[in-house]
Length: 99
Length: 113
Image (cartoon, rainbow over all chains, first blue to last red):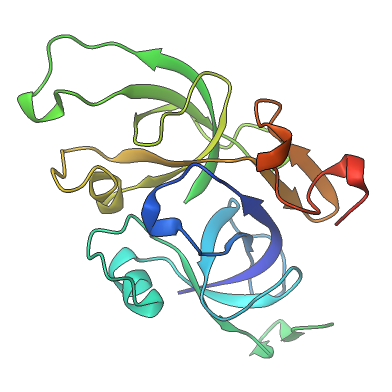
């Protein structure tokens, strides 16, 4: 799982049917200091996250499908937002959902 | 899943039999700002994407699943065509997208979010 910051959303009409009814968000991976750490990913939202939220992203297909409870075991989903982070404490200090 | 722009098509007559019937496109992974995010790659199209369109794609095991139930030996598949997206306070809209398909409130012309 990785830490990320929701930085936007995506609208797509023509897509794989397994994505129907799911909210797609843009997530910037971040380090415990809140700085960008990697390239922006698309993730399916499972917890009602929104722009600006600090989140936990599961970046593995099998677990992503399990979290979303999708019926199709072959749904091509590889990233899911599985939690909204309140606080991260590390050597760098404390990173909060809303600084 | 990542963002990419379709930058070309690939035609390969002689290929592994399990790849017969698949449509290959060359895609350039991009950032929401439009900058290149890594080298271009060849991906299987599962949604009818075309040249210059903005898409999202999956890599790895899920790429084959996108072409289910056959599950061909592929490592990147286009899984959706993007109508519009919002990144922080910038808004981008695919010029190919008809007005009615754009997400409500995601069009800069309406002044929405």
